Amino acid sequence: METADIESKVIAFIKEAVHQENPVEIKGTTSFNDLGLDSLDIAQLLFEAEDAFGISFDLEKATDITCIGDIAAYVAKHQPRTAA
Amino acid sequence: MRVVVTGMGIVSPIGIGTDNFWKNAVGGVSGIRPIESFDATGQRSKIAGEVSGFDASDYLSVKCVEQTDRFAQFALIAAGQAVADAGKLAAYEPHRLAVSIGTGMGGYATYESSAARYFRNQSTPPFTVPKTMANAAGAWIATEHKCRGPNLTFSTACSSGGHAIGAGLQLLRTGQADAVIAGGAEACVLPLTMAGFNALRALSTGFDDKPAQASRPFAKGRDGFVMAEGAAVLVLEREDAARRRGAAIHAVLAGYGSSCDASHLVAPDLEGQAAAMRAAVADAGIEREAIAYVNAHATSTPVGDIIETRALKNFFGSHAARLSISATKSLLGHTIGASAAIGSVATIMTLRTGVIHPTINLEQADPECDLNYTPNIAGRCDVQAGLCNAFGFGGNNVSLIFTTVK
Image (cartoon, rainbow over all chains, first blue to last red; front, side, top):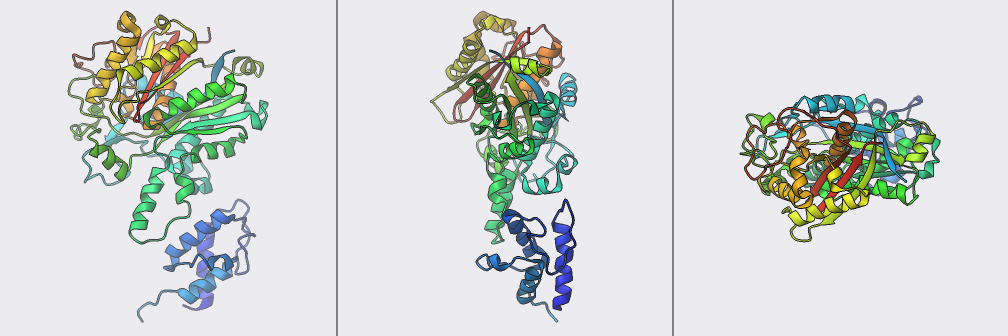
């Protein structure tokens, strides 16, 4: 899957997963802070992303993930190989 | 100084909201059906009193639903009703508003599902701990209603809600709070929890084909309790302050008594039960003969209902024969940590209406259970004082006394 495709899929996932009281536009540079997510919300979001994208976040490195683009990049790097 | 009840809320297998609950209780409607929330094929007991068709998102925000266990959702909804019923708690400073909630198991739905994931080597949901912890219900209620005063959680199995309400009374008497949101909540119609109670041979297993007849306190042929879920919450205040703010008063919470059997982890004990009733009556400062109604603990276990009958005779003496008694668990099953709070709502409604809801499935009483349990059809009685019993594993006994405002 191309990185751009992954990012649009991650954005679609975020729109579904995050219940915003005051919706902001979600793009690659949108940070968790922009979305008003606290640490518990972020942990829950990454947990749901694991199931959605078939990946597993390394919790040690997950602190580096601060925006939507970071999730997409992580997914692109760790996406499960599918049979050709 | 008296403490009064100014708000009530309830989520139960026979209705959400006090009016729905009470209409069905008086009508003798059973809330017990085949288990819907999980596949109970492998369970010895395949029936329960579930809050059927419950959808938390009808009442709570999407985020709240996602971050709460079912027991906390029940507690939040019952508390919301109670606060709306009481009205204008904003008359008090936030740090003078307290919360006191009882739950036997806490967020066990979350715990069981997270444990299943863990032992399948799947990742662990981040909300495993904050949804499971027993004080989650109290924390959410405090957040929702901005209660910045004492926030207590009691876990004494089936008497949890009784201790929570009793502690509310103490907080008001000692001046530590001006209003207390107090009650109990439970949601443990769950595969592992049910299997655990089954392993103890505590649950009814002989009525899977006729679930409405399974919970039959004091009746011949009863074979264990039926698991159930729900919540009930009261708003408690000091009478003078409640009157000053113009609140409608449902009843007086007059007495709280508790005891521990200190004899056996799960077997009921006559002396311990009688001691709790004696302490509650002494606390209320009334004569035992003033009690006209008893909302019995009465779980429908073969031993428990006999022991409670003997404890009532032991404490009330010849007055026991004049008591009107009813078993709310005949309708709902056993809501564990919520049961004393639900029994309190039934007791208060009896005081308010003069109607005693029936103990259903009592066509033929056990010869050793020979008091007036209000069999099958609602009764009428001028009740000025009612006692609600709750006896839990661990030998934890609680009795609460409610009286009319007169």
